[in-house]
Length: 129
Image (cartoon, rainbow, N blue to C red; front, top):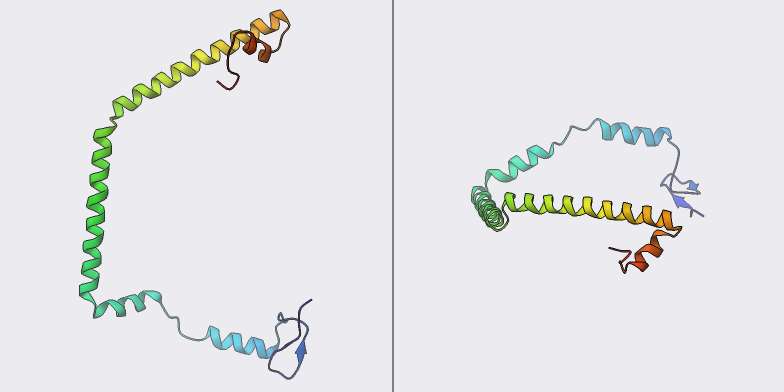
């Protein structure tokens, strides 16, 4: 259960949540009428006297970009797109052959009145393969 909280009005409340009162609304109105404080202005003011740290930060970012570009080039040399496409084509072919084999095993199992699992065991095949 929520504990009693003194809201500073000399009255005790049962919880820390309260309904809007004229005092609470007055506080909200004064907060809303304050000028907008833009975060952009703060960053502009902070960078006026600090040209050197920003320059070093840019240099660090340029070094990171150069390292990433180098990694991309190394990966491009290591794995060519043609080689990748060959592997993808072989994988598609394998999956088509496997699907055909499973279809044939299913048909044979149906003809012999067995389950597919029984057929896998009979032919020495791994059910997870």
